[in-house]
Picture (cartoon, rainbow, N blue to C red):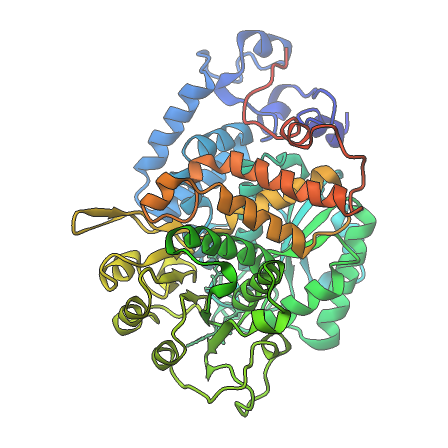
Length: 557
Ligand code: NAD
């Protein structure tokens, strides 16, 4: 039997699997390890290949957790979990789902950042496809090497802007791998359908190119026509080999990210999580914060530090949302201000502004520093998306707290080492009044007898649900309205108990429920707007729920 049928046997869309003996034990989507039952061991030629005692999945999870916790560092834990994923995916996802708050920081930010930095050294088994400039002319052929021809969800990076860590070239593969693991864990997209891809077009980082363990092609990053033609060949190949695939552009540098998104989003069902997913999760946090501060979205004045993909993405979605509340586009844009590496983004600053910043370059005197911008503009919310460690100083946070009863301070830069301030600083410097969220997790803070629980403005709240909704409805396109619907849904799921702790996101332990509701909202939009590739089912939520992958073992015999 070919691998497609074998894998699809585990999916809600397919038939039953049939593999035997060591083939079964080395196939991570089918392997149950010591949990194969006596009957299965007899029926599937496994007798003798496993130690005699049969374990339950609960016992396997306990044992795995014990082994994991013994590892001396976060990176060792990452390596251990990767090995588990390559051995037994059901057990891996069961462990991740049962201990989601402990596992997400290992399989994703912040640990994944370190894993990427060391990807060359810790690389053990292939996961995903690497396509390099040397493969030009053969991309479709190489995509066909992927053993799962029914792949429907691709996360692709070219490694130029990995988290806030810069140009890591193909070391960035950890990101598509991690994001797809989150799709499965958090939204139940079957792992059979997922395909991580890294495009190696070189790197600007000389230290990597000359490093003895570097895994990529040793050349400077391609730009211009060479780059564009490579991407064009890639997109054409994806459409040919995986015609039903949804593609997520991930961690591209901002000179390419905006162009690729606008150039391809109508040709290929695709979105950019750094721009649109971030926008949706940050907007949701802001909407939830309004339940603490009072006031409407349209009354906010937001000052961003960082005018890249994340910052302008958030502002663009804020504008869409504020327009829905009655503001004109000009009025809504006037509520968003940016400080980038050169100071306040204003008209006549004297430098050439990238296209994505132009709409937010207001007619205002130039201000050189963030501190002065806060004092002059008096924003209600300060959002850090600059990758600038410690950029929110005590003076800045204290000024925000002088201006606002409950200042919104989001330090979204990842990983933790890049955060504009810590949770402890945000609460400490604002007498506990800041409504704080961060990109990477921070532990709760005790201050003057109050417990503050920082929310994590992690895209994981958004992209898995958006992707699931788009996949199930077979959406032809992913629209800004879908991201707005996702933000509203997420904000509504924040409970009064969360808000009482200062947390503007739901607990991660509810992530499956969150993803299902977001998927429902996205699919609703696809059916309503004529973008779905299939007929609207009677009950959208149940239709989606029935297709979610649950990490439980199937009976094979
Ligand atoms: P980007 O490269 O597109 O933009 C970075 C921006 O920061 C640029 O406008 C740059 O001018 C500005 N900047 C750099 N140095 C600065 C300085 N010294 N002072 C002021 N501004 C400065 O990157 P991006 O995709 O927008 O990501 C930025 C950060 O946001 C990263 O650390 C990333 O990890 C984080 N991020 C977080 C989330 C999340 O938490 N949900 C999502 C996406 C991105």
